[in-house]
Image (tube, rainbow, N blue to C red; front, side, top):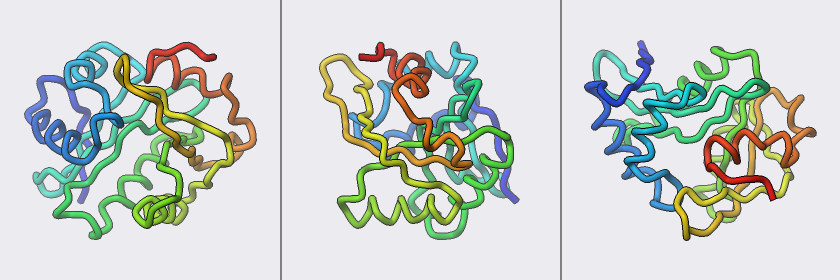
Length: 178
């Protein structure tokens, strides 16, 4: 049975999460590690959950609980455990713990891996938005990345605008709307 444990900078699972975070996401798709620790310790909107099964580390999910939606920032399952249903269980758990729409970023469907990821989220009730979105850089001097947004509980899907996404720009990436 899956167990979800709220991560803190002092959690015994912290190093497992950071190891997977670094191996699963390229530098330009994740925040610097010092910044991760600071946000985890200080931002009340930010939640990081460790996923375990029978006491063994499975993966993690980080998200932001904003007033009108939940935004998934990072989600990863240990590479040796992918394809065993854990990912779907985590996404279903995530959706079951909020009545709000859930928003996340995916790479554009230009590679087979990106298409498989989109199909995974679609199987779990997410819809791919046509909204033109670029992920702001995590670090000064880095470039933005073209991404797509997916939404579960689609009533927010047609309302995706820069203003709707302002909490993501402000809190997650710490940039102002242009």
